[in-house]
Amino acid sequence: LGLNLRLAIGEKYARVFNRVLPQGQSRFPLMQLSLVRSRDLEYPSVQFTRADLQLTHLIRIKLAGEINYRINTGYVDASAPYPFLFNPKGNATAGNLGLNSFGSFETMRFNEFVAARYASAFVYYDLKSLLFKSKKFSPGIVLSSAALVGDLTQRNKHRLPDAVVPERPYLESGILFTNLLRSDFTTFGLGFFYRMGKYAFPDFEDNYTVKLNIGINLE
Image (cartoon, rainbow, N blue to C red; front, side):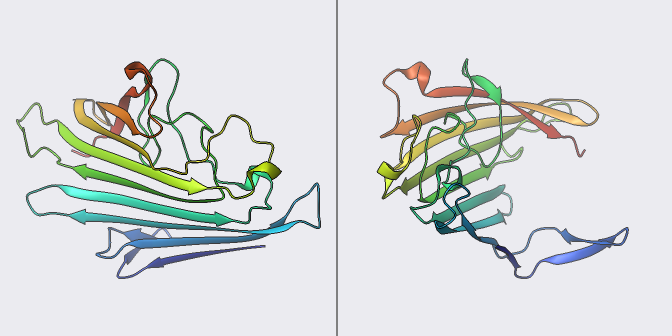
C-alpha cells in the first residue's frame, strides 16, 4: 500500500501532444512525498512504514549564475528488513575515474552506508560562463557540496554487509568544468571531487575521484 504526493506551488504547465508537462521552474521548492505500508515476505506478521521526502529548487541569480539544491530525508521502521532500509546513492568507481551523476555522492562506494533514518543535501552553484566566455570556447564552472547523516537503532536485528551507519556527517565537495568540448548535440566536461570529514580514508588517493560530465548542447 503506497501514496505519492507532489506539491509544486506556482508551477506552470503546457499541453504537448495531449500531455500536460511542467514548464520551467517555480519560485518555490518542489516537494515530493512517498509513503509505503508493507510487510516482510519472510515474516508476514512484521509490518513497517517507510516515508521519503524530497525538496528540490533552482534559484537563478541575476548576473551570478544559479544555485540548484536537493534535500532528501527518510524514515523506515527499524523492524523493516534490510532491502527496505535506506542506501544512499554512491557513484564512486574503481580506479578513481567515472561518470558524473547529479544527485549522487561522487566519492561514496556502492552500498557503503545504510540507515533507517537519514537526511542528505546536495548543493550546486553553477557559475555558467561568467568567468570566461568567447565565441569558440565558453566553459562553465559548477561548485558542488554534499552531506549525509543517519542512524539505525536496531542494527543487531539486521544481517548487515560491510555497510556503515552514517551517525556523523559524511561530507564531500568538488568542482566541475562543463562544456570543455562539444559536438552538435553533446557537451563534455571534467570534475574533481574530494571526500572529507569523519568518513574520509587515511590515504589521499582513496578520497578523490575524477568524473567525466556529459551534457546536452542547447546552443
